[in-house]
Length: 105
Length: 119
Image 1 (cartoon, each protein chain N blue to C red):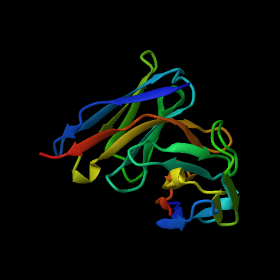
Image 2: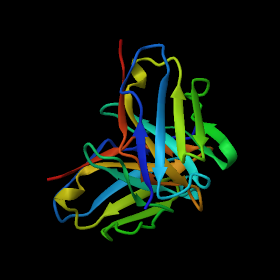
Image 3: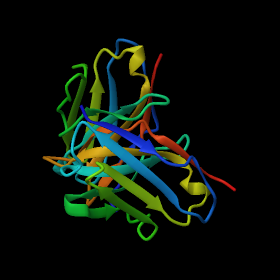
């Protein structure tokens, strides 16, 4: 079965750039999707088709996908961006990465 | 704006059957893929399965044999049943809409419902 791998945690200082990666075999040949989940809330779609942002998602969130790695980049990270981030791809069904907890401090 | 709401019992006994319903408003379930996802306490997201076009289904192989997803288009609802539950099935269960056009994305989610498996 297809697997997506994420680092368990990433830390960043406020105002800096956070990069969260997601690795999978030839992931660049598929579309990568990203979700943000804050405590007690449902996941929120923030990036789809590798780099597209749904309406209402701030432009400090961006995405890329090439080779075996998809990357979510948060530019000018804010304290309110502290959350769990999940990548997702399609392989005869929905596949999620294990999630990355972003700490902003 | 599409809104999804999960409903069902919050407590299920081991070896029994978990049954949940997702009621959709603001859009018809006759189109798109309608999905169940779960999240054990403190853990990540797990795709359970979905129903689509005319009632076809696709399930996570790890749950195949225990899970059934069905839909009632007239009521604009879709449902999850999971048989022979055990403590590992304790989780927040989410229903969501899957847009499969040009790459899959779960664009609308319910608030989630915690289901605890315990005697």
